[in-house]
Length: 310
Ligand SMILES: C[S@@+](CC[C@H](N)C(=O)[O-])C[C@H]1O[C@@H](n2cnc3c(N)ncnc32)[C@H](O)[C@@H]1O
Image 1 (cartoon, helix red, strand yellow):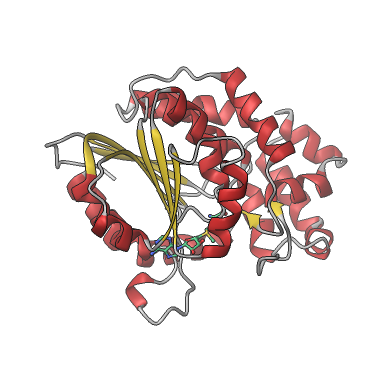
Image 2 (cartoon, helix red, strand yellow):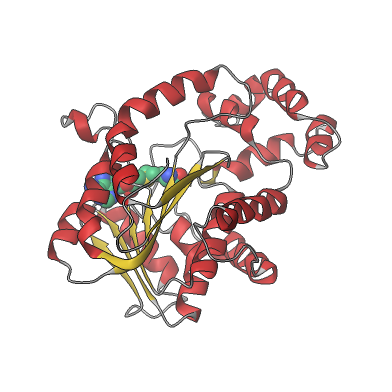
């Protein structure tokens, strides 16, 4: 079983395996040289990376790699706590390492590839821990890889999670992986669009994770790419708990790498995510963009506070 992608598993592991013996990469990761040295290395090794199956665009995304994965996780959680999005910045570092190791050694990708980067997995775990999420829904859960990072704190808090994706193939991979570890009654996997699931559920959720995506030639132009986020959030709003946290992948409106490539990414995001951004601004208290490799947005909505800043 294979995906359309020319790689399997996390793209980070593939890129890291090509660069790991390069002095400039090691120096960047050790904090001894800055981001321009990483960018120069990636431009110089672009052909080698592409030959190993890294899509051209993802060579540019690697220019956004954090020097330290633990460092960006700690900084991001501090930012969220400072902005009042999460109640605390401390996080269970040992649990993060344990979950990372379990996922690395036991998650069976079955030929699928993921653009969830290590800091994005750890961050989701840290957020679920900080907000003590007890009722989580993942819309566009794909094969369960991002959800796998968050399930330990959710279940430890006595909670449950629902993973929703219309693709039965990826749902089956999620089921095989997650139900080996977690009880099916607490980790439900639903083959449906997020909109259809939300229309029929009576549940309320205190953590909503968005990572759905549609092809950019999808007939419904308003849903193309990440345009689907607006529709999913609109469908989820009546099902939010009094205090609900929203975590979204691919929220990238600001770039710290300096690569011109991101001018186009940001322009496309402004178009696709414009209605979503406006909805978040009217419905959420705060929404913060974190500078992970692909960009993660995190928002908080308390029952009646529709004055937001995106
Ligand atoms: C391919 S994933 C995105 C990749 C992910 N960022 C990663 O790197 O792991 C997007 C998923 O959204 C799902 N999807 C598309 N439309 C959806 C909808 N309306 N509701 C829920 N999921 C949807 C697709 O089936 C797909 O599995």
